[in-house]
Image (cartoon, rainbow, N blue to C red; front, side, top):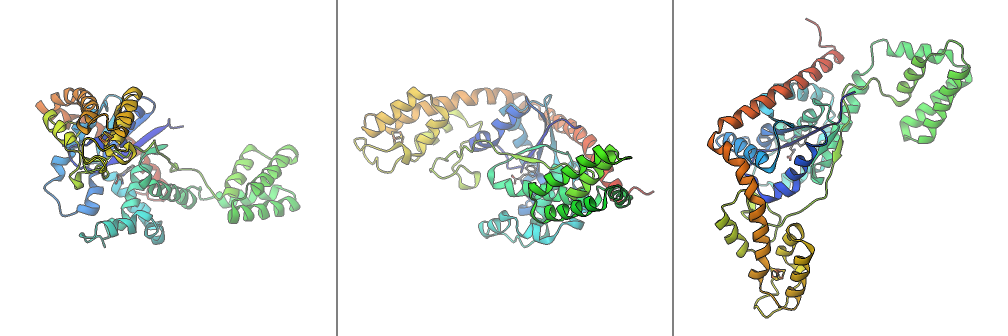
Length: 404
Ligand code: TRP
Ligand code: SF4
């Protein structure tokens, strides 16, 4: 049995901002202490929407990896690698593509959403439609148990599960599976055979637990009373019942953590493309300047106007950065116009500067010697390759591609 394995990826977008940290990286750092973890730079994924931007990719990759390490990812505890260095992902993607119904991809909700959102780009491409399947290959090739992603990606993990199930159904049976099932069925009394097959049909159509329980009853009875019945027969018929064969690809689970939507300086969601982001390693003077200029409750036009914290993006930051006593001070001061907005922002500024200090220190050696980052990624790619190649051997075998 494979231990619990965590896998996640991020498109290379350069220096990370606080939204990345609190929305994903912080969680990755925690997970590396609990499970075997693989984290990768999804550079091919970036190309599914930005296929013409060949100048930025290389720079963005390492700018991002520095911040992964600054955040606390430890290359001794987790495997950090680069998707495009592992052509095995492309091989699995190709093989899975053969049997994946087009409708499954067309129905992924992010497909139409993104086409609407990224109107300026021509996304009527094969790569863009297929990208959730590429993501499925990324996940399945490591037989990942858990996939930490934002809610927006849950449909991709769901697709991954369906793809794995279909693969196991199509290829997870040995060639004589049907004959062995027939032989096991023949050992049952005629009535039990009919009853078992009837429940199997019901289960296939409705997935009803009741049908499963009835079928299990038949198998238990057979184990107790049919002479020559073996544990193998029970397992064969259980597999036959569920329509599954042997599991070659594992169905992963999405791991959604509490969603912290960090507002940017204009009050909308923090995002590099909106120009409202605060970087993880922002120059202290710049950080202070950005925070002091940050949007507040529009009702506080003058210092003497009271405000409502819930209508203020700075309050969202206090929820992440401030202890209860400070938060009480904010609520009281804001609603009574007892404090000014600059005064209110100062504890957030101080907390952010303190938070960023160790990030800066951890990043520095890699900024001084960029080769060290390359070494970490090289090493991670080598470790990932061992697992990916092993899965591909199983997959090729199962699909009948093991001839020479
Ligand atoms: N599609 C993800 C995103 O755009 C990135 C990604 C690619 C990913 N492959 C993955 C995430 C595998 C988790 C697992 O954010
Ligand atoms: Fe926002 Fe604080 Fe100003 Fe109130 S006092 S509006 S919470 S910045």
